[in-house]
Length: 315
Image (cartoon, rainbow, N blue to C red; front, side):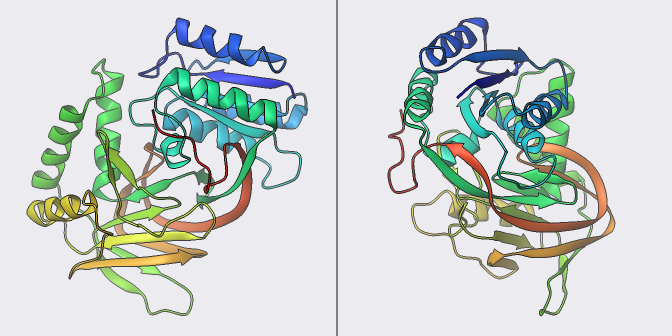
């Protein structure tokens, strides 16, 4: 099965030695070509061309969650159909939420070996994805403060600052203490509108994200095999948010407290905002929008990974 490896050379955990190791490993089991991305949106175009050209059976993303998201959007450029190449993932970013949600090893060499095994055995897992307007997402989307924080961190990275936990924490504190969040209105068929929301997390898997090695479980029932889960708040009070994050990082299942809304397995819904609000998908900023349409897309992609009952052992 011919494979195309899409490499983001600017990702945190990607360098020439790791790229060469991955290519040499895959060439032992399949005919492999590689191409490096040159900027935002390039991975979308590369994966889309690979899907339409029907010349490869697998497209592997070597990079962070943003690179994987772009590759997935390229593969799904013509919607869901039976000629979409499989998606392979080797984590090369700072957080790698999607790869970790699949149970793939965090260590680069272990993840590369796992991908080789899955290729050799033609071992796939079919997953559902989320979609907001025209953009697909794999593990989560955010509306409100977390998306504004993601956008600010991206601006800082563009200015040459490396992404780090301390930088993200400082950016989050500044946004939560200084900026007010627009009011959000959640609209679901068969339910009355839910007004006065200030922060919305839309999850396609669990956990929602990670802080270092600690998973944050805002939507503990979310799964690649069900619809979308929602976690929403009516306040962005910093102390209340800190208490929520502490509970999300706990070892017991997260339960909403007063002022929070938790919804499981939703097929579609819409979000309106008092004024355009920041949005992100898989940690990639989409800019500010005033109206958003979300949908769950079941059985959208084949991913090179074990079944959820037989995941790779983390390394």
